[in-house]
Length: 402
Image (tube, rainbow, N blue to C red; front, top):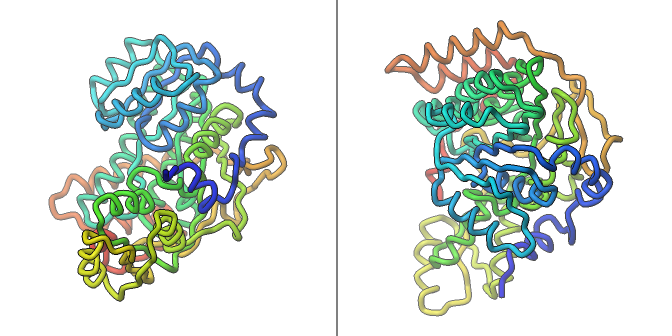
């Protein structure tokens, strides 16, 4: 029987156990003192990282857990998963809410509960494919930046003890709007750091996370459809369990305005075609290389007749905003590599110039109020705020591929 967790450990992260196990164990008492008996609000908790964060904190017995997500089905599965896991602690005050964190009903719920001790926000547009045109770009920036400020304004009414949200490795020297939005988000949350403590983490790829290309391999196999993957894009990967532990350690152990990141070596990077090949071979298939998506689709018909040769199309990446490598910090940032064994920390971040952030928001609100706004205008506004933003535009989107 195929076990995804074992496959990830053996073929993707190549670690038999979590790389953060020793850091969690060494800080167990501190984590217990900061989590036990506290009230938690987890936004975007039905997603891969949010649900893993929940599983990481529950053994330390929080008093209450409210989970907010727009994915109603995802919340149902989260609840079933938690309730079905042997030994999993779930507080009596556990409430999953299918709602938008930017809605008025969310504000009512937040105020009625008198706020929360710990707030963790995992709601985000995380895919580079979410910037194909001006409408997808606006939705991305609304969620990652503009609505994030609205949430922070609400939290300022009843400040939490800790606020955590997820950034991305793509925020370091961004080449796509998604990465730039997260870099701006870092400034936005740091602008509130005089009201309550804020922390974040720049991530590697979470292996087989919801909506990711590797997760798509599972769906393609179930439907006997061909697999497509880039052969020239290297990425760092962490397991779902590790993703939750990164967030828990950053949230509970981090100081105000710190950015955490996994300490991974370049040799640990993987290409997507390597993962796809290992995945198919683990299922007993021989990989059959095709020259195009169309050829792979045609050859996939043979799978329905019992063929054990699986058609794939591996090719070079040619879509907008695709970064060929990953980095977690820039040359201008101060990094602490001694505090934790498996996590590095970007330290010494200052409260950003609030007037610049306000000016950026004014420009974004104004440009989105127009009917004829272009993607190029938005890129120009972002580049004015982030001088090192060099958007890679090829005119092609991931949605044009399998």
